[in-house]
Image 1 (cartoon, rainbow, N blue to C red):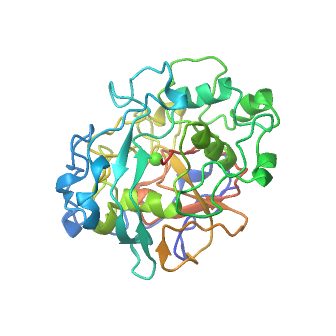
Image 2 (tube, rainbow, N blue to C red):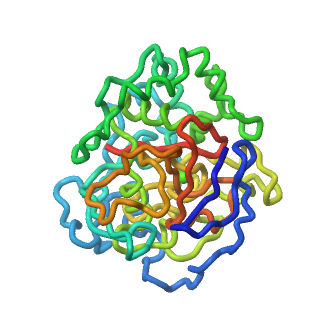
Length: 361
Ligand SMILES: [Ca+2]
């Protein structure tokens, strides 16, 4: 079951049931931010186009820009477990497993000054995790109760207690056969196939929060905290309305079920685009693709509205509720759901055809 998306208490009255949820009549259409100019977001992510040539650089980024080392360019994905032997065909001919540095700093979660946060430098995968990468995980026998992550694995280096807990094991499917079956969660966007096919660069969907966390651990990373994810999408202190800036149209992101030319609301697998299809125009400040649209993305935190850790200094909400958060909007949603302020949540065992994830490191 999908909960209603909320913006710090303001319900949008949208999404409901798991399956076909998201088409969202989420009202408020384009909501604010059409002004084009606002917040100088600087138009596209000029920052550096895709290949992050120079990472953040110019963007002024607050503090950090100076950011140590990493602030520049792509970090190849070759060493990651999911990438061995994988074709480099994301966003054209790019490495599907690459990451880019996000220079830490301070910002307001959901663009609300009542919820300040500071995040340290971290790395975030450029693309949503693809079917091809997730297939490697499944084929390695991972992501099941038969091979769960180790207790404590995948912890954020500055957040005690944020690693895998043995109590999470029960959230995984018993074995690989059960996992494969579960990954076909909805006929609306039936991505998973037991054999590799033509959709290997589309974003993995139908994954539970537990599988997203387990994948990232196996791949040498972790699931981003909600604050980290929000920071990268909002362009840090620039507080962008959308990852690339103030306005949205279909040239920036995958949404409205219309990517394949079908009518708005008539969703099909072909509306869930290969990752990086809107890159670099739709990239965020730090060079990450599809932060808005294509698939929603699980984050690590338990969900509470409003945020209950204030201020947040490298924080993650670790106190159990019933749901975990995900953000960014998906291919079935209307534009308003792609705004960086929007949060949604679901029970961590939930699978949705429009929810995927990416890893932090
Ligand atoms: Ca996304």
